[in-house]
Length: 389
Image (cartoon, rainbow, N blue to C red):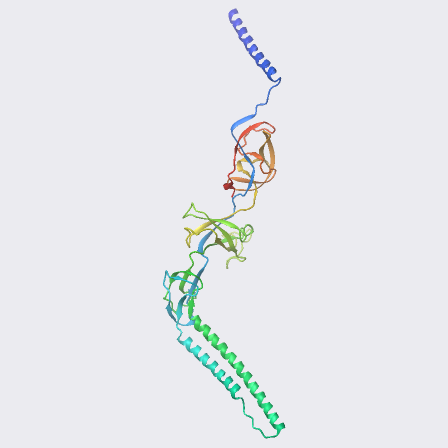
């Protein structure tokens, strides 16, 4: 028993000596203990930059021709005589497309021309030959007769000039109708549809005879809700994508927004039930990049580009606490908790509208080991400017 007790005492004494040695070493090298910084290989920080988050405004539309022409059958022009183009033809502005029967129109024009020319001959005769006056030899009487005859001639000439002007107007009208019998192209493009089977008995007002499309002038058309009107304006930039080519992105600009909803639509009544989700307003997008693989009729998605610049931080950097939000920054190697005010966000980044400035160091993945004023070590990462739109 004594041996065991001695052994225990020796072991206890040994522990005491070791502790004393540690304490003595600490006093020798510093006189006090030093703070151990938080070292965490997983902590990362970013230098704050300005950028734009992805837009929350997403629309859909259809690719259509911005420059096209429909020629419809016009029953008022009479019988359709011939179609002067075929599908696939390339036409220029002014190319004849459709010819109506001009028989009756030509006759009406000829009648108008003859009526005008008849009046013209009467004017020529009156100006050339005038009117005869029988003279009596009495200067007073002859003077009055001559003056009266001259007034008559002047009045007749005025009436004939008015009649000639009316006759010329009739000629111009007949000529315009005759010229309209030949319908010409108002756009340069490709003939994509020809229909010769039109009939007067068809009461439809949109019997297409010829359809021309300029394939190089595509646009996107669609409808946006009344709730999107406040977020979208003419000339805003957009990005266009298609499910057919998911790796392709086209650029464009909003070129038109209607001030009026589609006919027959009524705004939704707050609190009302049913499927009415509000009025729809037509819009158009001009494509500013190369058309490439886009084709007329494609359904596309449209993202309105957000050009506003704000300070951005990774979403994970923001720590909400009640009704406030904080981020952890690094100042002179120490962690500092900063209250921030927030703007909008997308899937990756959060706008910070107050509390930070450009080039502040923000910990992008804070954890529970952080303490305000405590030294911290973290690795720097950078926000890809390409991801900041």
